[in-house]
Length: 330
Image (cartoon, rainbow, N blue to C red; front, side, top):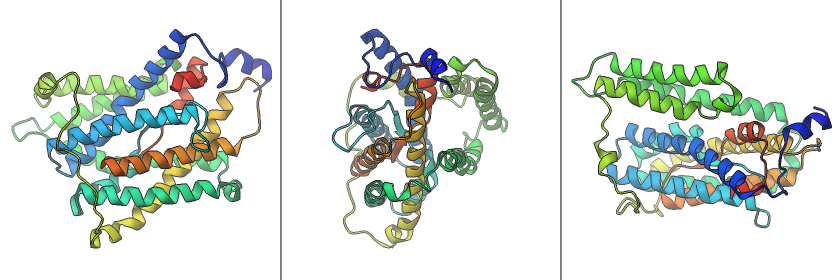
């Protein structure tokens, strides 16, 4: 990419201050793109593990709150924590399988303990990032980002048959195909500006199709309060881990490090799309992104919800809008 091409693409660099309507608009778009994924991931894990509604409400609330707080932390950069770039944070799909196993085998308190302990390894990795920069190349990090989605697919396919007993046998598969079809159609053939909205569009179409089959219950949404804090759902923290904890800890550590590699890739990529003139990768930015990611996982464990990580849509959002200013992330 030449400097001239970059000048035409990037409207506001991280240190520049766009008009507040522009920053607010980009920030709102980022939230609208991210929130459905945060909610859906938590609900999928909790439903598969057959957790009560009280816990699901709390876990969704905590995940959204922590995702927003760490997104601000990434943009603001406090000391060595944060990238100083717009890196949107959200729940990590890489943790779906291990979190389901933890909830089934030990419950939310065991899962919370596992997330807290594994987050410490992410801080350790960030502190030694300078020794690993030859390993975490852009190609390797990008490959890991693509492979993470593959770990989720078997679990998602199992949910296609999880429908009410009196529903049609085709309800689950047709709803799933409609959702996937819309997402793939927009991602592969849609305009660049529409690709960011593909997950939300898929959810809307999927809900509509599910409603036609009578498997979508809107009543809980209508009954819910507009503003409030879920009560009684915090699972607590298990300070006396049992066999389930030790059996699952290696898997949590491995997945945490895999998520850290994804963050490294996002930390490298966001620098490439945020500057008018190409620059060498600043690994202090990547280190700050990892520290903020680890802080998010630590808070997620203390709150008893799913771990979070950087969302790769951050790069797409910066490319499409041309707004990389930190104020958009705040």
